[in-house]
Image (cartoon, rainbow over the protein chains, first blue to last red):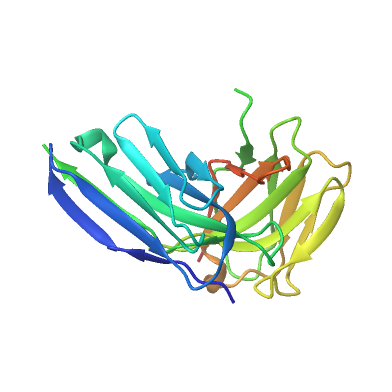
Amino acid sequence: TQLLEQSPQFLSIQEGENLTVYCNSSSVFSSLQWYRQEPGEGPVLLVTVVTGGEVKKLKRLTFQFGDARKDSSLHITAAQPGDTGLYLCAGEGETSGSRLTFGEGTQLTVNP
Amino acid sequence: DTGVSQNPRHKITKRGQNVTFRCDPISEHNRLYWYRQTLGQGPEFLTYFQNEAQLEKSRLLSDRFSAERPKGSFSTLEIQRTEQGDSAMYLCASSTLTTLTDTQYFGPGTRLTVL
């Protein structure tokens, strides 16, 4: 069974601070996707990373895929209250077909 | 709006009743997935279709659950004889496989409450 561990589970910071969310596994993934979810809504795709060592930037968000494709990180620079939400990483396994394995999520709160 | 749509958005039912949810994927996507998400957890895979064929089912999908995608477009998920433990958000996602990845786009979900 593939597992993805996300940390931290909860994060409460002040506006303007930087933060990093981690997603780790002992399994190799063919791709990894990051989503953001608001209460009562479905996850919204932020990025997909495919290549080991890949770095993608989306405005103040920087995503990195580990060289061995077993882990990933999301770094947010100068967080804003609008960044508040549940951040989920999800891996597409090399041997699990198309199913996504999700981490438990990181609940981020950015206080004004 | 050309995203994934789900209906109803909310469903409250009594234990023992049957419920059916509908998902309309992004029109050009041939893959459709169902996930279940309980409070404080990430989504868990239930089943997926490629066109009208159901290719994979999770062990989470008990005999009371059945999913169909009869014409390879919309899909329905039915839960028979609902139990309180079925209360969750049911999410649908769709994708189209590229050479590199199978990025899935999610709908807004159906929140089921079993009383």
